[in-house]
Image 1 (cartoon, rainbow, N blue to C red):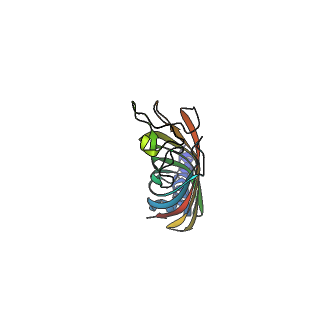
Image 2 (image 1 turned 135 degrees about the vertical axis):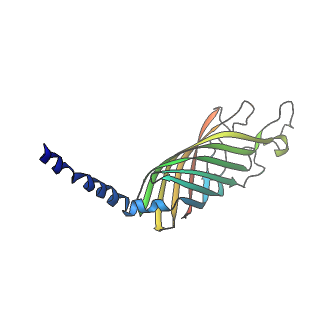
Image 3 (image 1 turned 180 degrees about the vertical axis):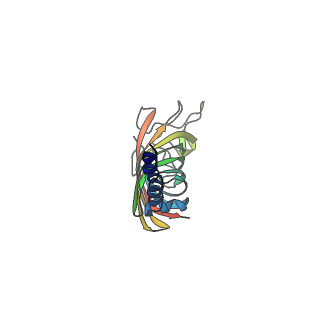
Length: 204
């Protein structure tokens, strides 16, 4: 019995050494850089709307919880078509959520889920008001509206250096309308809206 116990003991330091070797690999070494910031250009196709796709820009900040999980927030502004009520006018988007997946010292692939809101510059007609009968109606007939949004999709990051890289997002921005919302050519209360973003990322 004593011999059996003696033979088992050397296995314990071996397991510890394996764990330490994994933690010292390049993929794990990146975990020391926990803060991230970025800038991006973004395109958003509002479901049912007519005309060109909305093009905007914004910024992003993130905090690495683990090597496979990040908490992040993003803001985008779409400035064009300020008086185009058929598309909701100017738009501001804010999202906060998580990004989870796999990364090494060269690239990362993730899934994302980020709730937030999209604010439409011309999102609804005030109750009890009437507009002149022209088409399209003037922007003065409408007021801004904030709608709940959920961004679901995927992320690809390519690391050019230890503290810099490129990022591509492809996702479905799900937007929930209210009873008084303009629907932009669709009767659906909840719409799926394709959004693609690309830009730079920096880590500290």
